[in-house]
Image (cartoon, rainbow, N blue to C red; front, side):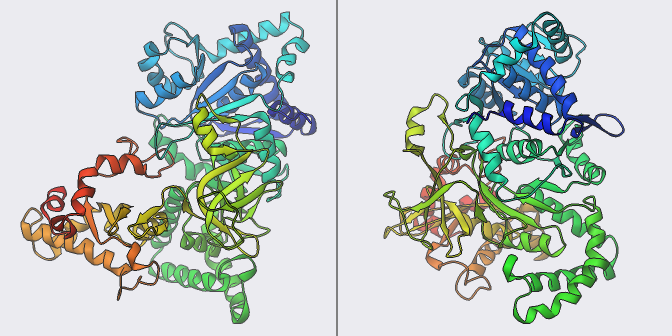
Length: 633
């Protein structure tokens, strides 16, 4: 059966014509736009694109903050038969933006006023570009540039002279296998790859996701993740659209920082039922909750922490573990703390938030316990762009901390060993899936497509297992496994996350072992805290004694994971770093050492610090008290 995103949108407008679809704040308040009004704007813009010369199958780029124009812009592209190449506004570097636009053979660009200067700086290197459509009015326009307002006027004129059926026939001619988007992965290993997602990939993933959560037309969300993010795209926008629900976007500031500051204000205004989150945001929210509690004085802080302890004990691992056994006795206390303390905290999130859904990297179990205890569960989901993206999720119906929840339906999932042989439940291996949400392939990259999709099965590159009660557990990258000298394979991610979580002197860490005698670590230390430690010992930071004290402090913290340490039961000692190199600078997006989802790009870090890794396997480097570490401080 044909079901494109246009079919999904038309169905929603037919069923919910007068419901509010989009909410946007450009001045004082959030202004609503109904499903019917959105469709009218989409038709006018889509017709304008056709009149400008956009042809079926053309690739168009979209570079903008999340806002009405983003959503209307993408839908308009589909009505003109085009494919969207959504671009992250975090792509500062000309080469990142340039690579994607050149690689995707982009002919037209939609861009917000805030992002226009990036396009202007590289337009000379983009000979294929025919027109640049700017969302916001500009004092002057360069060659090839045109305002969105003018494109809409051209569209109105086109529709007044052309039968509506003729225009609509373009979008209606799209089939399930026609391309909807080319989304570039941030690439933790090599050049970003363009994930080609079809119209059916999207509509199938909407149906699959709704097998795990119940939402209806009364729901509303505030999308705080960038709309080019596959997760925000499907769960924040298309799922809500399919149900006739409301989608609000964060008020765009003049700068990125200003936009971020609008998030807490907008949350209170919109009172969302659901917020999509990623670990970095979850940590920020937690920090601001704790600061807010602290500001109310010692007594409030004590009450909050006591309530948290009671809640976390009562809840156990969530779901069917909640209130088990003797813990049922804590129920009256949890109700009391909820009424006295946590209900007030929830007001800062609008007071109507049912839950968060966490995507992206794995969400720390302690963070999940924190949010659950205060009555705003943050359910862990799992997916990847190549799967459009949702594969599994926890939700109100079924959840357990530490797991990635139940697999969406319909979807086939198996766990395979390195030779592709299926493993039984409970055994760890690569997560492999098959379903209508599996991408069409990588754009202009048949070799990578062949490596990743075999006989319709998508090899995710992630390691995990299915529990006996059919919950999926994701354990990190299958392909970034470390291999010890005796051939034992183990995943570094869990160890790295635990070290960053528990050791306040370690800001970032990357473990390395490629069939070497021992594991080593590259560490970005927290220099401010190290300076305090050195000063506390009445030593000069720049003196040899000061440097020795700083290195010793880092070593002392790492030793907490080793025999005799308070965290020694977490991981086998042979997987832990025998030695470490302190690095002079952080891994950032600017230096290309983390990608746009804030994951460390292992290959690039290993290449850049090749000499430091080699040094760690010498007798001098094995002892952390060495010149190279001193010089990095």
